[in-house]
Length: 290
Image: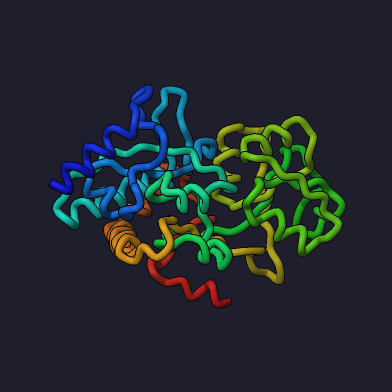
């Protein structure tokens, strides 16, 4: 009876639009935790809508990208592991600056949205994963010759997204950088296209997706410091703080994702032969101590 009531409450809180379930007024968690949402048959997942190859809402309303595929695999694997039916998914756009708030308010049950795990965020939400490791890079115009590495950014106008860490990391390393922030990565890309900024920085995975979407317009420049990647970014799946059961279930599903070879297939399908991506180790957050 409880399961039926949960299912009814979740169904009435969602709508279907152009073939994709989109968020109505709030998520399906209702404060009961991620596992309860999956068991109910309705789960709300946050992701990006403007990141080709990772999280993209297509013109026909469908969703695509590595984060989308990973999230779908996780909730379906959790359902299978518990003998539940695969849940219907409501997708919710989750800009970088809003991710913790949306989780804390119960508007989403989990988020897979190029969500780098760090100390500050882990104080507000739990993380399953990491499922992927990448590093920070630069996107510049194809004809750009003055920017070739990290140091050549000094005095340039650099863009990233409000609430993300990469631009501030560069600013800390090079105080002469002029930092410009936008609400979305696609706004940064357009500013770069128009010549309003000199470079855009974020994870290499994201930049490669935008470069592939506009052949001949942009190029990706790797950033190193002392012969090593400028940063390492560990992508995780965010969920409500102290939801230990949900976190353990996500890690078990992600382990199956890697062990089955499905993760490698999804990377190839969404990002091609991208050497900027490697599997993470679900449940191992020791990197936070470094």
